[in-house]
Length: 124
View 1 (cartoon, rainbow, N blue to C red):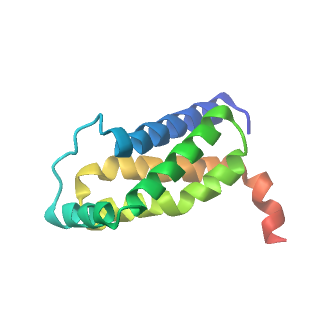
View 2: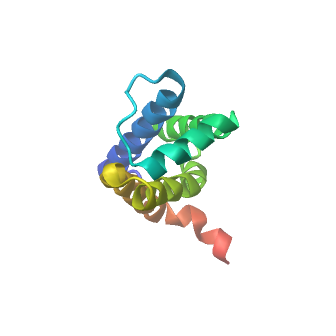
View 3: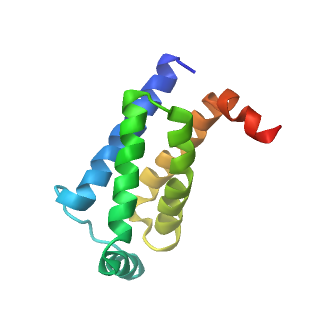
């Protein structure tokens, strides 16, 4: 659980979540060109007034938990629906960011595997 490999993956994932979460508020990275379906979806999330920001806050919280190494198994479980939706968005609506989406899901799966001892009581 505390191997160098696990720590590096945890920090990379935490930094990515914090940066992309804050980017939804501060927009320090320009929005990339995306397919029409993806742009329409993001526009509908923005027009709701809260969903995009709720996801951003969750990304920031999970990222910070991973970075400070607090409640990591809980943070990883919170991240599952977010990372799956990131993957599905890039699979079905905008394939331009598919590599990053796959990386996020893969790191999440690897870290869940590394912390599996924490989840074992859930399946008894």
